[in-house]
Image (cartoon, rainbow, N blue to C red; front, side):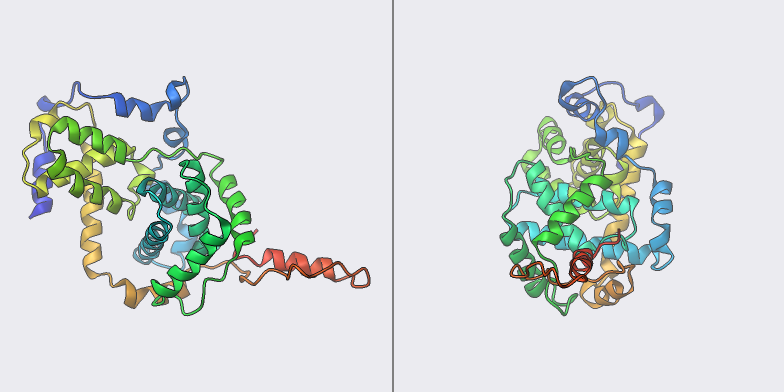
Length: 327
């Protein structure tokens, strides 16, 4: 069994405990741009499992933990395909998924419709990762196409949101993340570790896919990215039958944490064996907590202020609130 081999490989004795090794990538995580300040990723966004469960309690009163995981996996898949259709780099997509997960680590799904937050996170990540600003019309049009052509098994109606909804939601996302926008990803340390190990061509494709898969778990919220990279590399070594025990023994890392990440990954793979998204997701989306307001088309740009209609301001305000968000 692969799972047994992975833990057997990681089961070093205390006498083999870690003393020294490559630290450049790890140090970059602790301080941003070589300043004497701790990165916001480490300081604010490495969360405890119990904290996650507590923050999700409102949603878990409505859906089970397994159903909640299925919903998050679905929207991660949605964001992955949306990003690919927009021709974004994987780093941008991964950052967007982390933003998405950070928001729902601190908020209920009833606060913002995930179908609105997903493209909003993509939009924000494309700017933060310096990919370039995605045009508003292109983003919305691509959302329409993806919902219609790729996810029609989940949604029977068209994508309901417009540019103004995404722009307003972006401010809400920024506020909830306390403007902590720098996200360290496992990809760069993974490349560094694989090159140091010397099996780049054999290991990198498999380990890279596992890092992508890790975004479907809570690992990106609970562990530093270099630990995720090492855990995925270890699993790839087991799959590809590479003996790297001595290399891992020289690294100054917490092997128990790597074991925990491996367990999350293996649980994900077991979970996905029985999860049929196309059959289950529509019922799950109907069951999940939702904002009280419903999306509607924004008022026509031709609409003008009528001084004889005292209710017009109130109606416009109601339309602006109907964007799939609860205040």
